[in-house]
Length: 400
Image (cartoon, rainbow, N blue to C red):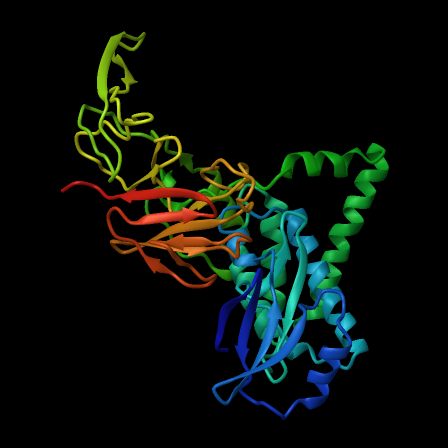
């Protein structure tokens, strides 16, 4: 499926090439005149002789973007699956086939943070539902909260129903009903407190712990047999020990500035309890400048950094993807301003290169004054300007 994002005024659309244009006139007319709950708003466009199906995704996030920074718990899994199955059943009322709903995490969209799902219906897509569900469960297994045994067990069972020759949707629904019934019984026994405690526990959505943040103590691992996957996964994960890493490396004096800014003075203020000296930054006063900001005091920068122009703050990029937005519980840095989306943009790393991506923000992300379209990666170079809505940053890379 060939797809790309385009902006029209303040709205963002996902454009999908209509590979079998004209062969599914009934479905196209049904989508145009019968917008249903759980389906993205649909329209047709023609460009350079090609027909495109367009889906309005303004203010929505792809599932793959949301769960790149959140671990998925058992309750969220059930909510996602119930919504998907409800949308599929609703589609049957309009004679829409299940195989034309796209269940890739890149094209399942949600209103964030309510997590109300909307799906793309692409006439002629035609990928078997069981195959799509298998891919979805594989994705969720890589994003699950591994400490949630119920979540791991539920996903594994659903995945196995898909890969079995005679398995599929009915068995998955029965498995969900079993978990729903179990929760109702717990609520009955506790007077409704079980669900409340579960919501409080999952609360938000705990951040995903990256593979590189763990030390393994058990030595080499053996590939599990399918029948023992859950027990292997549980044993493996409960023996992990999280490695504590400092967010900022130890600093020694050296000044790194950006154009238009001047350097400051580093003052040593006396020993702390640990025996190390505490550093304070004192600006150099100059008559022709409103203020002077010390941007960094590093002798040898070991990780990439963002320099926040408004405050002069230096933000080390110690994990990737690195998310910027107004929702502190879901992102790694929160800039000042009311024009910042909850999950606005991110910086990712591939090999030795760093890329900027917009996460379908309302007020846009800009790279050296050029707008970054959702779904596109912009290669970053040293001292590039990154504008998040109205807030400006500069990126710095390690000095070699």
